[in-house]
Length: 294
Length: 319
Ligand SMILES: [Zn+2]
Image (cartoon, rainbow over all chains, first blue to last red; front, side, top):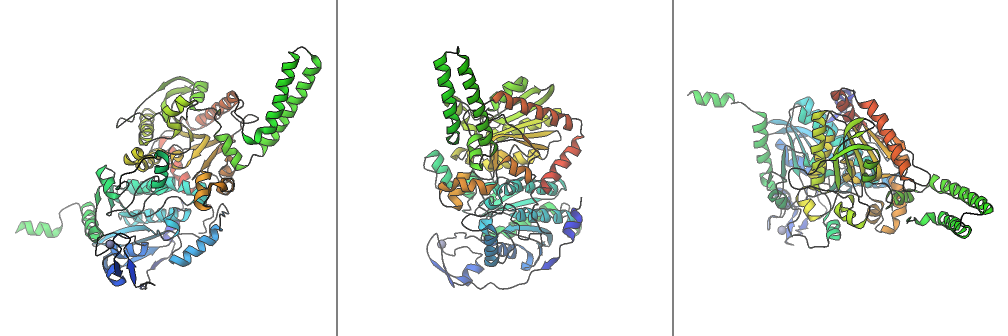
């Protein structure tokens, strides 16, 4: 297989730390409607200081929040202007891609990076909901594959953070095939004996939830995150019944045995570091042994 | 009674004329027999014409035709000694997916497929072929059984999609589909999938991550229904015909995109006109595939299956 060559070769470039200055200095919480100053919102990890509502976070913020000292290296993956179906709805797909690339500064709906968490080397792939609703494309599949194979090469745990409405319709059946493809990719990580941790972010739906996202060794989510296969509206139209208020929320999934834990954003990093340490450092450390001797 | 599709109106008209002639003659007049032959030829010609260039949306209509052969017909048609096996051993028996062991052209196999039902009673019982998590978990259980006992797995796919219901979501529809895909990529026994009618999104691929994938000539396989796609991207279901074209969901398109391995020809005028012929063609295809795959080392099979899907859909990627 030509995979080793394929992903070792891509240049791994350091993140240029460019402070994103928001256009609006104030954000209105969509839950309690209070106004929040942008610095306060950023320092509070996009969580409303008044009502603890967890707002969506883009991929870059996710990576900065999780890696030690917000330091990481981005794993480049092949993209190009792929439009295999020459798809056009009210707009050309290639135009949509260009627009979303300009808007988000990302190549596609995912950023994969490697770095350290609590001193442990990890690979993290985070979806960017701002890029076409985080939809799963051939390129996102490619990124997950690169991330998986780098994790194996580095013998590092893989953390994936989906935030996606599902498949990218503009890539048709090839988007659907990414379900099998991403499952095959994480299977390699699992079979290499490495931990595969999923942080199901708001929202995780459709072809994304029904593939790699629901197969984590450990499944974590955040308060209020919406997770499901079919969307609320489709279900409502099908069954014509009122749905429970907390339906498809992370807490609902926890109650029904579908995920391991719901963790507030502030506690995410410490919790993940604790888990990683347990899974990666399996025997007493030299320090612990020394203390025992005394 | 034959349920005609809208674009079949000219055919129906001719067939009506033939009926009329037969009725009048009572089968005695030779001259009328000649006339009937002539009309019959015209019908065949017209069928060839219309079915030779069906639009993608017309193919969707054919794939969903209520008289198209269903799983039950295929099992009755070419599976000997079929023993249905029920239940996911966790919660329930879901009749939207039927599975069991049986013999196809002499080969013992595990057969799994969506059943849509063929009349009101059976359609309700099978939930129109839209499975809940239990259906997919039953499929996984049967794949495990096949893996352990070294039986090939045949999956017949025909579903509008996984059931979008409150109960299905609560019991983990997404997880059930994800695990089915994982199971397909795990077993070390031959796995053959055929899209016989409608291959609807995640509910279809859950049973279609196979060593060899075939589609009937007029079957469709898509990431989302044409109607769903139209209402999201064009903001109106009226654009379903346009969406059907854009999605590239026909067997012919999918073969070009290398998502499937082969197309099974349908009888003139579609599988619903001569179901027996479609059933025979399918069993011949299965026999060929089984001959090819049985005896291949299980680890090699699995490795190749995974590599196939890893490579699939890299179309258009610029390295
Ligand atoms: Zn608030």
